[in-house]
Image (cartoon, rainbow, N blue to C red; front, top):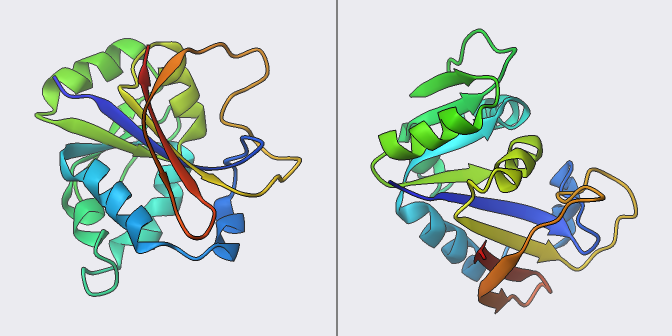
Length: 180
């Protein structure tokens, strides 16, 4: 049984929505190594509908020459949580149906390795509430946005244990947490 490993880009005030604001910070190769290390043991990708709809056109045309992450995204089996999608045309994609904690638990048993999640805030919040996330990797950018969807909604309660930290020259900090 694998773990679900979540990777999010967030602001200091917890906003993850529409991370185009990250463009103001150079992508540090060490950050790429951290994300690549997290993905290396993953044998599946789990996405919410909106993230799937953004990732499919963005990644499906890329090659390893364009981006070293392209083979992972294009060749790895993808599982999409959605109650509205009828089809998923991106290579190796399967629609799981609406969110169900039991279905995600079954998926963890079915996949022979860890499962990678990027973005997919609604899905991640539900999985955190249901105790399904085995690793939460927050790449925290030194910016306060003041508005936007936050990863942790007001009233959320969650206890985590810090397992790793790494700071980058851009001011971004990688904070890795495990459930407590």
